Length: 231
Image (tube, rainbow, N blue to C red; front, side, top):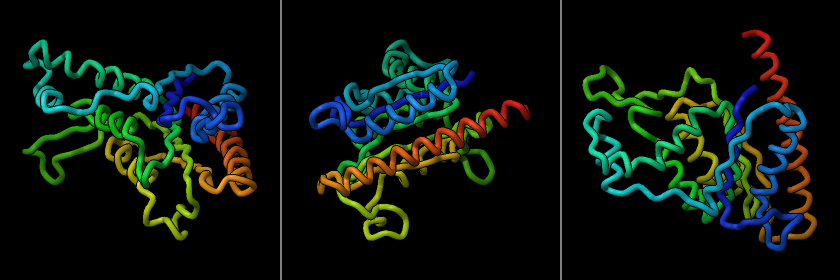
């Protein structure tokens, strides 16, 4: 059994195809999790909605507390870090992270940025030592062999590498950079486009994304079984 952490970041509460004005990224992440349950019914699923319930943004007090050694923290510091600790605990438990993250103004939604800022934690997800030779920073999750799947939606089209709007895509590149910094570099991405255009192009893009999700679930589940057999 593994643990799958399902994250949603859309400001929209519903799913497209079911609810009026529903979220495409929620539709895609739900599709992935439903297919995963079919393939591996015994796995544990954790869910966190950072779109409807965004984490508190980082404050000066949070930074002070996070960069104070645990044994020296005052009670208020533990309170300041309580939500962050819960988010980090979930991330550490997860073997597979599935994140529905729509593109908002070329980047990630504010709730997901707040999530990122809360899980990038010195001493918990990355290490830092000024006296360390070479790079003073290092990832702490590398040996955990976690996998990340980013399922996105975009109003325009052409954001994949080499396409017309690739230079403006700050969703997947940003997420890959942050999670790679923590030691999670096995990352897969699938996106639906044409939301602002609607019509046949949007429906075709959603259908292709769902087809790609089904294939990715099958491939990841197979790789996981092979890893468990070889362990």
